[in-house]
Image (cartoon, rainbow, N blue to C red; front, side):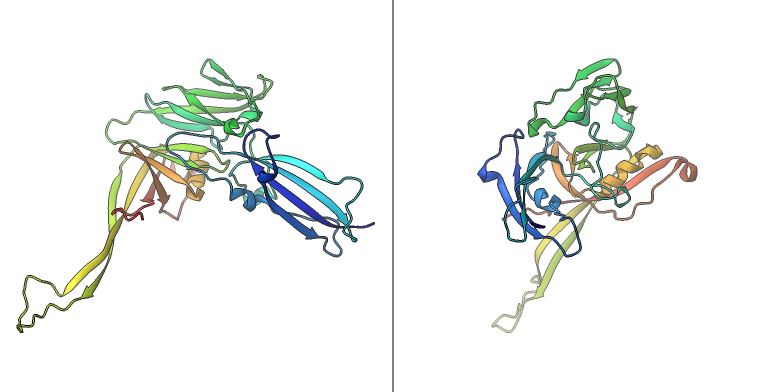
Length: 327
């Protein structure tokens, strides 16, 4: 009998890979073979992403899900094949993405969840290093080793290793504890004049990443409102001059802040790109974690050859109205 169609059961769940049940069956998909083709493709990424609801309150939790795929292969009579069916596979899902030039379903880093090899931290400040626990055996920060364990639970697949204040060098090793996978240099910045702000965003690996903005900050807000013309004429045939004809209503405002990174090297361009592309950003603002949206849409990447020293100026808009109208 000829291969004709596939029924795909898609389970999405948290916990350990074996911790799934009937309630975790989120989708059942059915596709038939197109004439002249010899395989069937399913796009499941966007379906899974619906269940990755990421929140951040300065807490750096692991957001990952297990995805189990059970594919039932059937012939033209809709009878299941007696061999190779069902075909079951289990994957770990993060809210990451690849670039077009990397091709279909690129395999991203399975160790350090950063593209840059350079970090900038304020002096005396503890940083966060996102790693994928499955692919890391240990992290060495200066001369201190941190052993990484992975018990298979989604709540620790992404781990955020503390970078002690004023550290200078980070080395990430494979699960054999000897193969060096990545080296990161840490620059500790002294900024005596301006207030430093921390922006946290979801990077291309689906992990929280911090950027500190060290230089000049400006804040402004734009008001929106509506007006209408009202009748102030009294029955006596007069009107009060202290009452205006135009009345204002639906008044609100949105606040925009413009931040500057200070001077960064060319390696940091990838971080700025990912910040611009991120759909989830937060700022640590006056003791609170608040949601923001990058308002700047144009980015000219700077290089050491063209620009010598690179400072990025980026505008962000708070993701809420100035006057609380949450209902």
